[in-house]
Image 1: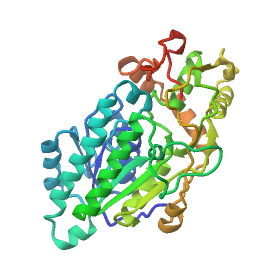
Image 2 (image 1 turned 180 degrees about the vertical axis):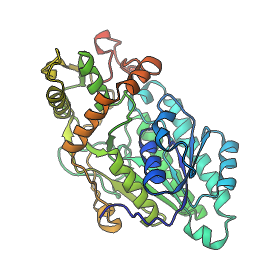
Image 3 (image 1 turned 90 degrees about the vertical axis):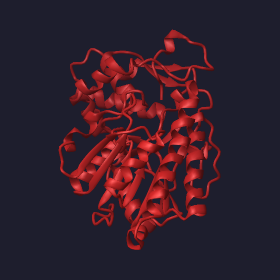
Length: 372
């Protein structure tokens, strides 16, 4: 069974709705579900108004360029829109950037989440009883809050938090705030922790688009360490379905892990991408693309392995992903091949492909690109 298509939440406030995951969610809510959506987004480097172009003119959609660090501006969105639910995705999300500029992550992910909880609580406590009972605040987080795994095991909702990067620490803090606003103030909060997302519209700094774009350019494909780090991969549209499911069926005060059950070593994932490009670009002078792989100095505090136990999400809420890693990766590679103007614009204007997270590493120019 996929996510519930009979949501009880007709009017949904989404933060970060121009980002990668947020835009997939907004497109689904407005386009497929016909829900009314108010989208709050600051439009940082990773937020792109073009990501929601398909529904931008829809009568059920409104956009507010608002920074969640501006509490007064956030509060003014609630009352005129009168949401039945909030899905809070707005966050700084790139581990390497958090190594270089941790204060930005603390400000947005911790203080920004506080502002959203504070504004939502002020709005919710004044709702009529029936509307207050229906209202939900869904806080979207990451499996990285749990730290790292060895060769076996998986993260469950009961796994203790042990974040190892400034990014994951800031998300862990925001999770604790969400929990506290439920326990202390009664705000009907639900928390989700997801595995690594991938798919169309992902900003070029992340592993999969980085490798696709570098291979197309015939540049090195830099892989951290020996490429032994393992991630569980979740197609972004499957994640959007899961969030709708959690909002409509999840219980306040509960946490739900969302995974793809698609573990892959980084080096194997990069080889998969190379093979897909070899098949799609038979005339490319860079074939076989696997010859472009280069191993570079590892990321500081690089977690070895993430794996999600999403049994609770599947059994209690009736969700499961609709794509395998193979089919999702094929769709993703095809999208980047067909949408060169989209990623070239970002590369020209917002991110040149240079490696980030070098605060504690030698600035070796051979490592200039990001490695996943």
